[in-house]
Amino acid sequence: MARYQETTQTETLHIPSSIISKGVAATELRPWGAFTVLEEGRGYKIKRIEVKPGHRLSLQMHHHRSEHWIVVSGTARVTCGEKEVLLSNNESTYVPQCTSHRLENPGVIPLVLIEVQNGEYLGEDDIIRYQDDYARTKD
Image (cartoon, rainbow, N blue to C red; front, side, top):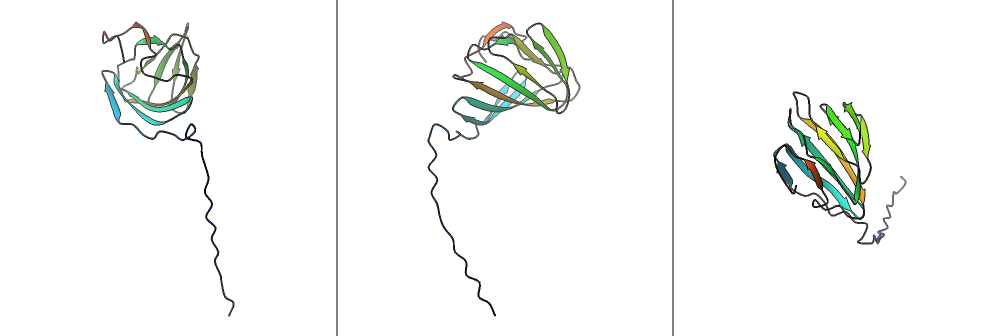
């Protein structure tokens, strides 16, 4: 009978701390729905956003980041600059830095999307609001 011999090697991989993601944050509730930070690292943040039927986020702009939105379920009405589009499951759009934009759920089921932010600063205080249904100044 042949003998089977297993050898294992353990290698340590050094990853710079600037690349390691910060992990998952708690869900934050908003008047329009909620968002959860799924992952965050240097120069990017990934969120799961849920918008209640008939609700919308403020018409806003960010100085320091761009955003990619991918619809997971529901229908999104997206205003980006002068354009307005409807997006459905598995459709996406790009919001350039310094461009006014708004996300709205015109449907009857919750809108769920994944947002990928890119930029040098990704803080929640990088929001300039032009219009807001909930009279907020900060998100």
